[in-house]
Image (cartoon, rainbow, N blue to C red; front, side):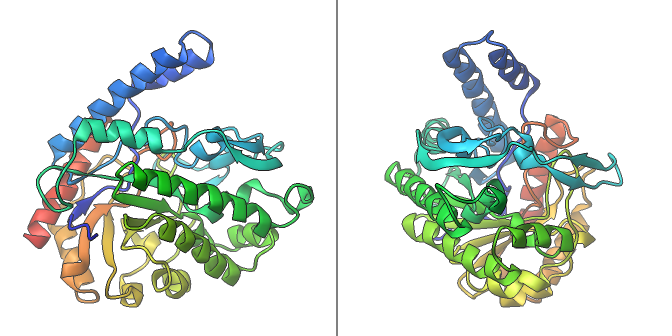
Length: 378
């Protein structure tokens, strides 16, 4: 099933202040789970309305129920300890605007038992989102297409350490095999519930262009080329399990609190990633020079479309419309215009902290994506 949308955002949206307050109140024991869920439901309804008002043809729940975009894995699966929010945020983050930041990797982060799923990761998110948006007859008909985002399996390699290897997982391969099994079960359930568009997020692949991050991942037990070949093999297993749904695949270089982790073009990873992942749409970060040029798009298979992430979510200033349309024109000289769409470079809030924008700024950015798509593609 093809997705014809020419405008799309990656997935996460800013948490409104009342939702953050409610999360803190629940942590203090001042709200029950059911009371907190009512607050989450309100926030998702408002996020859906905001996307509709901006004209978005692809709608998510904003990942508003998650602590971080990948955090639902450890929230719903037993076998990992020390998975605080810093388990997803650690590293050296950079920004010329808001300043650099260092976050330590939690010292007690470890795989402590066989992974066992206690509940679904995203099925409840999808069913509530669907109730907000409503059913639709076709992916290119009136209304909005709903999208669910999930992490790439090998992203969770950061939870496992060779220093703690042994029972229950002596090798990284053993651990990621169970991670992949859980994600395959999740996409099967999503499809059973009627989900027709699923996105896998794989920000760790572009990190391999940076020597320090490459060293970290290689210490898990795989060489850099294995990370790309084995990792994509696991991604493809999840995609196969989720057919006939359409799959998107998102790549970026880190996105937290308006900061980034690494810089470098797609050239070193384009061949193994672009040409072998079985996704239908590649959502690629392209908002500034850190992402390099469009030339690697030559390696995208003819049956795969590309969502150019031209609109940044890292700052509030709107990009000039004419400049964005011109960038689409440049990219169309490399890959056919009929296979292109326009999107955001990443999410607006890949964790609950969010980027340095207001919700009104976010609305303007989403409307800008839609406007550029109208001008670039008619």
